[in-house]
Length: 586
Image 1 (tube, one colour):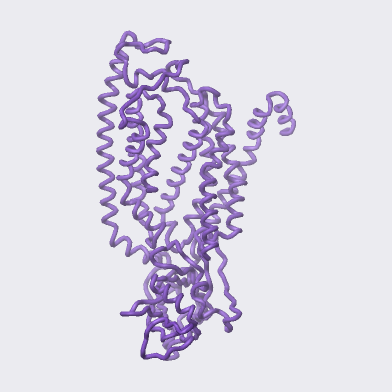
Image 2 (cartoon, helix red, strand yellow; image 1 turned 60 degrees about the vertical axis):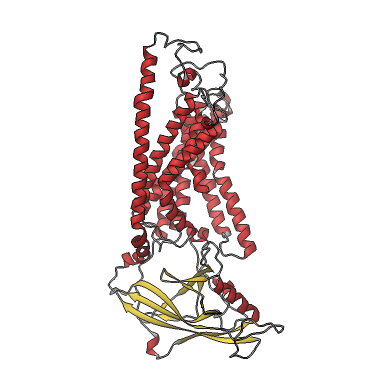
C-alpha cells in the first residue's frame, strides 16, 4: 500500500511533494524509534548512577589514578603513568602491564582515564597498623632526566587524583622547601565506612617529603646539597598506610562532602547575584512598561483616530506620520537570508529547551560529582532528541517570513539546522584532539566515542530535524500581514552613529550580561576549574531572569530601530537578543 501510494504521488505531484508525503508515511514507524531513543536515554542515565556496593571483610578495593596535571590549568591533564613512571603495576619496570578501566560515553568525552594501581593493596577493614609498620609501595631508581622532570612538575604544582569506590581525592605531587622542591614518599589512605559496610568517604594525605641528593649528568648538578655526594642516579622508596573509620553517613549522602566548601563560602554571593539581577529586571520592566503603555499606546490612539489612517496604497496616509508609522507597509517584508535566520532561531529554541531540561535534572541532583560524565552524556542525548523541535520551529518561521518564495526552500533550512551548530563543534573538537595528540595529553577523544556520537547524529538527530521540518512546513499557514506590503523597497534614511543597528545590538547585550555575570563566573569555574556546582535552584532563577531581560531589551531595541524608519527588524531583533553571547565569550 505504501509503495502504491508513493508511486502515484511521484507521478502526480512531483518529486518535492512525493518526498513530503512519503515522509509522512514514515512518521508512524519513526515513533517506535522515538520510544527506543527514550529507553536508550534512561538506560544511559541509569548506567551513570553509582552502584551501592557492600564489601566483605578482607575484600580487595581497586585504586584508580585518573589524571595528573598542573593545578593552575585543570584542562591540561595527562595519563598518570606518562608523568609518574615509578611504582608500575608489573614487578619488572621494563615490561609494565597497566590496566585501564572501561569508560562511559561522558567520561570519554571529558577526557578521563582510569589507570589501575595494582601496587597498592587495599583490603576492607585491614589496616597497616596490624603489621606495625608502613606498607612498602615500591622502590624506584630515578635518573637525572626523570628528576629534572619531577622538579618541573613540583614547581608547577602538579596534582593527581585517586579514586576508590567512585570517591575521588586530589593531592599534590610534592611541596617546596626553602630552596628545593621536595617529593612526597608516603601516602596515607583514610577510608570511612558505615554500618552497612559501604564506603562513604575517601581521603588521601601525603607526608615524608624528601630532597633529592646531588645528581650529575655530564658534570652538571641538579640541585646543591653539600651533605650528599654527587651521583648519577638515586634509589627512592615509597610507602603507604591505611586507616579505616566508621562514620554515620548514608550512602546516598556521601557526595555532599564535595559541596560543603562551595556552599559555605559562596552561597551569600549567589543570593547577591539574584538580588542584583532582580533589580535589573525591575528597572527594565518599569522602563518597558513606560515605553509601551505611554508612548506606543499614544501613537496607536492618534493613528486610529486619524481620518486618513486606512488605505491600500503604500504611501504615508497622513501628514503626521513619522517614525515607525512611516514604515508600516515595509515591516512585514521578508528579511534577507531568511533560511539562515530561521535555522538560527530554531537552533536557539532547541538550546533553550535543552538548558531547561538540564537545569531541571540538576535541581533533582542528577549531576552530582560522583556521577562522572552524566552531564555530557545527558546533553548529547537530549540534543539528539530535541532536534525535531529545531526543525519544526525553523520551518514554521521560514514559511511565515519568506514573502518571496513562500517557504519553497524549506529543505535548505532543515540542512542549515543540521550543520550550523554541529559543524563548528566538530571543528573545535577536531583541533582540540589534534593538539592533545601532539602534546601527549590524556584528553584525546577515543575513536569509539566519536563513532557513537556520529551514529546518534545520523540515526536520530538529522532524521528528527527533517521530520520536524516537514511538520513545521505542513502545519503552518502562510502569514497574512494586516496591511499590504509595498511593492517598492523604501530607502532607509541616514541616522546618527549611536542609533545604528550594530551599536544598538552591542548595547542591548550589556544589560543581560550584567544580570548574570556573577553566576556565570561560578559556572565557568566549574567548567574550567575545580569548583563543584550544586546550586541549580539559583541557576534556574538566573536563567529565567536572563530570558526576561533579553526579551525586554530586544523588544525595546526593535522599537528604537523602527523609530528611525529602519524596517529591517528581523536580523536586528535576533542580534540584539543574541549579542549577550559576545560578552560571555569575551
